Figure 1 (cartoon, rainbow, N blue to C red):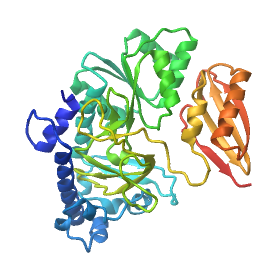
Figure 2 (cartoon, rainbow, N blue to C red):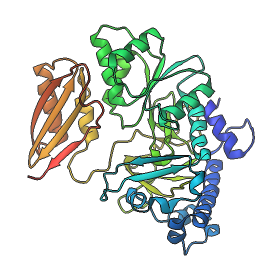
Figure 3 (cartoon, helix red, strand yellow):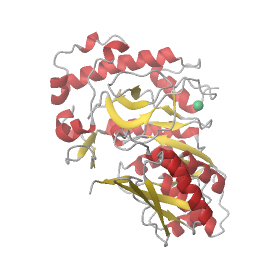
Length: 423
Ligand SMILES: [Zn+2]
C-alpha cells in the first residue's frame, strides 16, 4: 500500500490520479524531462545561466550521460553572482534568504523565491509529514516561525493543511516554558534542532517529568545516531530525520517509519552522489551530495554541490516506496583533519547528560569543551577519552573540560565544530 507521500508524488509525476504503484523508470524519465525544461528556462531567463550554458542546446539533453556533462555550481557561485541567477523580475520575488557562508568569499549567499516556489515547499511539508504525523497530532514547531515564509511558518501552513493542531513556538528560548507546553498542551510530535531537542529531553528527565511523544523530527543540522537513540530512550518516541537546506527550498527529504534513511522529494529535486573529481558514484558509495531543482522559478540551481557527505542505499526500503533511500548525512566534507565530527559525535553523544560540545585543534593537541545537564562521572570521562583516541587514531593529545548547564545552555544555539588554530 503506497504511503500518502508516495501517492502525492505519483500524482505529480503522472499528472493524474492512478492507483498503480509508481516505478523507478517513471521517476527518472520525469526527472530528465524536468531537467531539460529547467536548463532551458534558466538559459533563457538568467544572465548567469545564459553565459554558463552558451554553447549548450537544452534539447540535446537526452540521457543521463548528457546531464553529467553539465558543470557544477558551488556556494561561491551564489555568493559572487547571486542576483545574476535570477530568472524573474524583482517584483515577482516574494522571499529572500540571506546566509553567511563558510566558503572562500566573505559575501553572503542570497537565495530568492517566488510565491510558486514557496508553495512547492508548503505542499511538500503537507504531504511529506504524513510519514510521521496524523491529523490527530498536536505538533510543536521549535524552528524559527515568526517571520512569514520562515521554515517554521511554511511548516505550520503544511501541518495545518494536514489537519494537525500546530503550536509554532519558534526556537526554544526558555526550556522550562517549552517543557510546560509539551506537558500541558499534550504535544505528541515536535520538530527542532537535534541539540535543542536533546537538551529539552535531558532537562525534562532531570526534573522528573514523564513526557511521552509519539514522534520527533530532527532538522537543520546533521544527526548523530547516538543522539537519536538517547532521544528515543528518554521520550519513548520514534525519531525521524529531515535533510534539507535553504538552497533546496528548505525541504529535501524525510525518513519514513522504517527509519533507515531519507526518501527525497524526487518530484522537485534530483540528487546525485559524486566523488572528489565530480564523477557520479554508484549507489552504496559515500561521496558529496549534489542536487538540482526541477521546478524552481526565481532561482533554479542545477548540479549544486552541497558539501555534505552522503550515499544512497542499494537495497529497496521495506516501506515499498519507489523513491531512493539515502543514508543519514555524515556532515560536511572535511579534508583538513584526519577524522570527522560525525565520528566524534557518535562517541560523545552516547553518554547520558551530554548535550553539546565544541572542540579546538592546535598542533597535536585536541581540546573538548563539553556541556551537560549533570556532572559526568570519572568512568565516563575515561570511556570518552579512550573512544576519542580510537577515532582520531592517537594522532593528538586529548583534553576534556566540562561545564554543567545553567538554566540557558550556552552552546545550544551553535553548531558543533572543530576550531583549528595554527599558532
Ligand atoms: Zn521507506
